[in-house]
Length: 312
Image 1 (cartoon, rainbow, N blue to C red):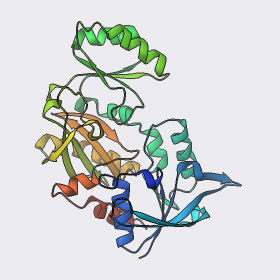
Image 2 (image 1 turned 45 degrees about the vertical axis):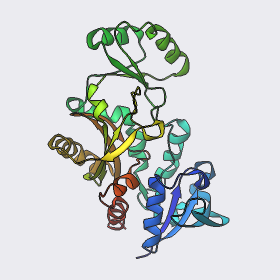
Image 3 (image 1 turned 90 degrees about the vertical axis):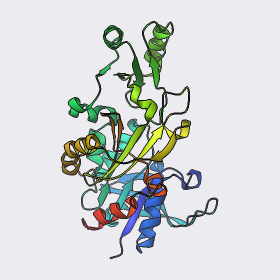
């Protein structure tokens, strides 16, 4: 079975193929004989009810600096392809949300992974609150009085933007921090949306697990250990990936959220677990495929394409 695949992603020339999950998915699709097209979000359009993109056929190879060859630009009706991979990185802003409205016009006739309506309805730091008993104490607000009350109760807290990504603007502040008021003022000026306030989890020093689920089932895991003097475990800010195994608590968390992911058509999801606590459910552009494989874990790209092909 040969499928026609369109990949909505960031510019392919800018990606770091050593850790890029989209690239891993493209390599596996090509290995299976599927035809690949690629376009950036800005090339997406709709006219007279037809959703199309200025796209290019693309061939990929696992060779840094020579990792792709592309054909001429063409107008591609996305309703005529078999699968669209929705894979551009956040921020999850109105530009991102607008692409989900357009792609919703073609799904499920064209299978969009992940389901664009559910991507829109499941912002990572809000979706997780549907499982409040699995998460650390969390407050969603931009009310300074509510934040001060939460800080007084928990003393050591994390403050981050509701629609942030990649560890940007994530701050730890504890009782007696003389910068706390200035930090709140900065957030009020920078972000129009509410903020996320969470109790700080000291277990993060031992790592922040990224668990990847395919069609609601755990498929692989890595641990990301923060650099010294760093709160964030994101790898692009110095977090160190290392091999990990699923604990009993990890499996309990996956069993709880898996049916909800499956019901929503969220085939490819990455969750973050610190100690015993679920902190995020990533549905927009999850990462970790290549790191899991590098540390001897499952071939998640193959598992995901198995799940996609079963729906075509």
